[in-house]
Amino acid sequence: MLHIVNKSPFKFRNLDSCLRIAKDDDPIMLIEDGVYAALPGTTLDRMMKEALKTHSVFAIQADLKARGVDRIIEGIQVCDYSCFVTLVEKHVPYSWL
Image (cartoon, rainbow, N blue to C red):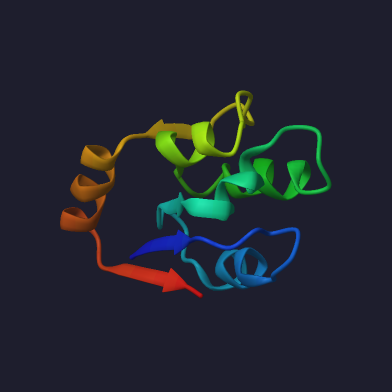
């Protein structure tokens, strides 16, 4: 399953819920305001580094750029829309609203 997180983890708990439910090796895609979870040095830094131990984590490049996020936690993969489509073709998508 591909877990898609689009809400800011600083305002909503959908990323927390996602990480509790996601099975090992399920990829996680950060889109829209969800890309704020990729910021290094925040209160989420440790949680995201733990997630990277069992999940591939991706962040949409256009959403990072649109929000002025120019540094991300090491290990999070920057993904364009073509990469996103490939992941959706490979995994059943689930959006965490």
